[in-house]
Length: 285
Image 1: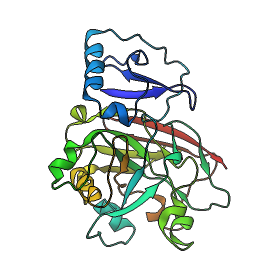
Image 2: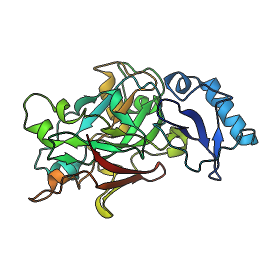
Image 3: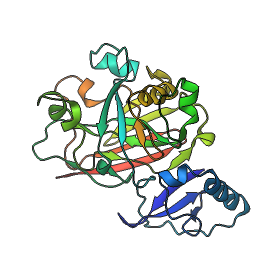
Image 4: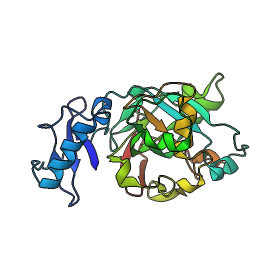
């Protein structure tokens, strides 16, 4: 299933995109798409049944904003340097264990919302990423197979980063990762059964129409199931939590000088096969 949330910011309603591309209203069945729903197999079953029987009312999508596909995200766990090609382009050694950092849930915006270049920023960068949404409480998992079994679904994430704040201002990466609007998510949450193998997805990103990133999740150093297992050894993952699983090669940081960092007025488009497409116009904070 392709689950999404539509409407003005803070007033989104749950919806479903059916196999014919028709937007369907879920608000008569469930209050929202969040961790409580993703952990409720009975409620998900009711959605599948209603979608299969054609019992869901259609929504007119013309002019309708698409919001983040998951509400009330508890935490966003991010994995750094998780693609072999990205590690090579930045001159970094592939990590022996996953590099873990956090983004605050309030960085999340819709897939086509404006992204703000921070005040004083000269190194705002792009990163297309596969987002994993947790569907079952995960703690101390023993195997990658268990990790995959705890995934509710997948989405496109844009892990926008300010490299000067991240790498040159001391401390951890968090200062360059948590600026407002720095985590567009969506358009859809695609349930794990529909995605199949998460290590067989293509990721692409364009800046002002120029292709910058063209990668595949097959390049991940730590695949999805292993990432979920590993993270669960250090923290409890709850339904509705999100893991951004890293970016392939092609970021501004990896280009020769002068690096083409983002400025207000730039347009970034990104997609992952089967998970939809985002488009953001960049503004000034």
